[in-house]
Image (cartoon, rainbow, N blue to C red; front, side, top):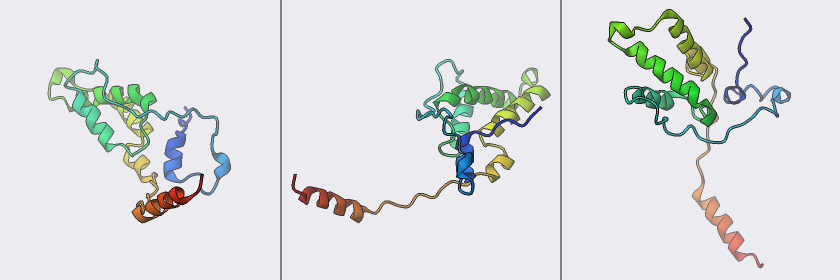
Length: 139
């Protein structure tokens, strides 16, 4: 089986396009919508796993179109953390969970490949100067 394609958002965070900008995929669909709150159908015992997964994810990776992936991973994490022997997670489910986490950049190997750009702090004085200049221009 071939290796799954790495999402462009992860490649961007890793800095893969700095040396090879021609490899960018311009026609890949982009979802600007945030992930949002957990779905109402999610059982209350699974919601803490949703919240923890979202908190742990790298900024800008999880979007609205990833909701089902996050939901499935949350449900499997709850099952993996269960102390009830009747609800033990199978080896196959663990493999699926590992793949889901990896696809979201959550495994140690995937996390080591991320390089998140450092945002420069905003200069309040520059913003004030720009506003003053705009206000002093004649219309």
